[in-house]
Length: 236
Image 1 (cartoon, helix red, strand yellow):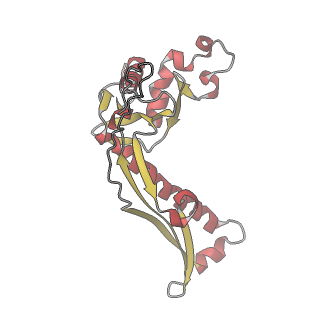
Image 2 (cartoon, rainbow, N blue to C red; image 1 turned 90 degrees about the vertical axis):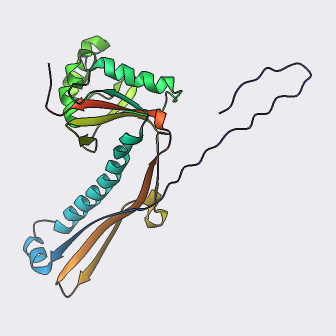
Image 3 (cartoon, one colour; image 1 turned 45 degrees about the vertical axis):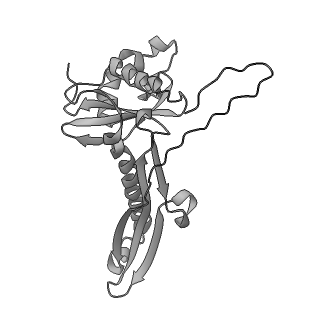
């Protein structure tokens, strides 16, 4: 943490010693998704359906989802929480979460909301200022498009990777410095999911595996806020 000091004319500046802290980030999670397509099955659908490609895309998606879920599961290590698992997300909780990050001096840029789809559709779309185009002074808004691209100029993402536990959704508002992650850099661009296929004669089929190695950790606990909400639908 740096601090500003007074400067006197003709005197040298006062040097500060930036304090640094270290966190341990272990690349210790290995996720894989594998499937086998036997020759008979491949021959039956070969003429009309690209089965291997479809399965490979699904395997890659499921493996990527495991990584995203691991990141959002770090919510339990955060310093800030608003809302309750028995209540809906309301505008007051949204503003309270933003205030938590502002009070922690988290930069205004590079923040984002992450909401479970049920919260996005049942709670956020029940707040008029978020979906009523008339309140925005425009002719085409979320009420017509079905999207809420931003709340208070902060991007909004809906994802089923939001943790569901103890009867509630653990949505997040986070700055990019809240979490840190690392992936195996030897398997493709930015540690992308690795896809491999090989023919296994003993099974008379082709084995395909999608895998990824990574690690995740809370980096700045005050730079994010958990926004709790219920899982039972809208509570009036």
